[in-house]
Amino acid sequence: MSASREKKTRSDATYVQRRNHREEDKDRRKHVLYGIAGGVVVVLAIALLVWDSGFFQKRSTAVTIDGENYGPAVVQYYYQTALNTAYYNSMMGASTFDYSVDPAEQVYDEESGQTWRDYLLDQAIDDLTQVTALVHTAESEGYTLPQKDQAYLESQLNSLDSVWRSNSSYDSLSSYLKLNYGSYMDEDTFRQIYADQVLADSYRQHYQDSLTYTDEEAETYYSEHANDLDTFGYTVFTVQATVEEQTDEEGNTVEMTDEEKTAALETAKADALATAQAIQSRLTNGEDAQALADEYADALYSSSIHTTAMGSTFSSAAYADWLYDAARQSGDITLAELDRSESSAYNYYVVQFDSRTRDDSATADVRHILIGAASSGTTPTQEEFDAAEAEAQALLDQWKAGDATEDSFAALAVQNTDDSGSQSTGGLYTGISSTDSLEPNFLNWALDPARQPGDTGIVKNESSSIQGWHIMYFVGWDDPAWEYTVKSTWKTDDTSEWLSSLTENLETVRGSGLNYVS
Image (cartoon, rainbow, N blue to C red):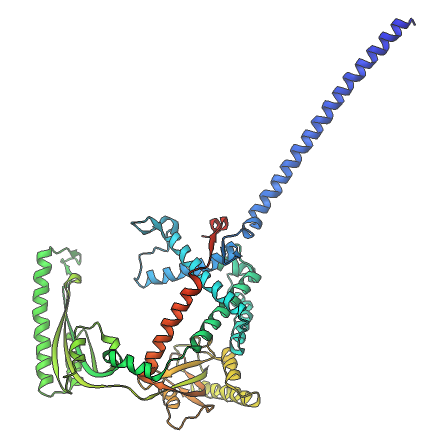
């Protein structure tokens, strides 16, 4: 082969090789591109699965308060609490909230355009802000839960398992938490939320209990607010004039014109006034008030015979100023009126003055443990009463065999009482007075003049919704009734101001995680 031909052959071979290499490179690039594309699809699929699982949403920040980040699960918990309150209020007719409609689709404030979701979210963040402020302050001061509060926290958290198991709607604790508190809630988060709430409530109560005021301060306040603080004895008959709804022969409602409503109300007022004047006349002539209440029962809107009440409880009543008048004498009678024509009603009140005093009787502080003999609303049998008494005595003996302190009694109350209203406070009732509507045996034991701090006993409950036995512990005597009212009001007001001071300067930053709260 000639040199030129050999050179050409090598050149052709090199070209073919280069061409083949280029084709191979193309194939490799295609494989790489296909591989990359396939990888991207896999990554996207995984990311979509992870997103759908709530992994990223759960870890997003919904709000940052005082430097602490909270995820959607925490805010959802407080949002759900606000939502439940709105629902309850709507059921009671106290709000316009419609539970069947998405809160984001309901306008709360027509002027600003704020939706119910916006409003409820604000409420949730406000509540969380207060808890955060209290927790951070408590931790900075080294405050720890007292025995009763620690017992309450453990009792509530330990009940989680029985709560979901008692309802067939849930197949696990996780499903219970997610169905009730949102899809991002888990057990650890829920436990931390509850622990923070208990610590916050405990520290707030600790602060409130630490507030003190002098008797001189209370006396000065009394001299300026005697009408509110004195206890009044009186009788009141209420006769109401209303416009009855009109119906046709078939029972259908017939709409009345404004003129017809006005005329009907005037007729009803005349009838009601005649009834009120008749009662006033007969009462003035010395007839028995209770007998009159029984006789006129069908014509009366309401009646309270020889009742006692602190002046502040009826300060807005049409007859308040008449009762407050220092010139009042026992047996005085008046007829007062209240125009409620905007609601098609008009009230007449026949009022008889009995007495006015400053309640200087001592109040009492007690703790108790209620052992129910039967379920709420059920009258127990004698055997059930006996079994509950035996259980109560056994618990009292158990307490006496231990530390036998107020703190240990409070912890025992948290763990065993059937009174849900006082469980979190260790069965504590403060400022008990003779005017309180408590179970008679309970009240008589608490106010026995011979009672001494540390006294214990067991008393029968035969009149409450849950009947059974109270294990009693006498904490001590408190201020006179009027003074207890004054100081309690001051404590509440001053604690509220203190809470405002804790939260007003806290930095609150809303985050993207709020998009997952609904």
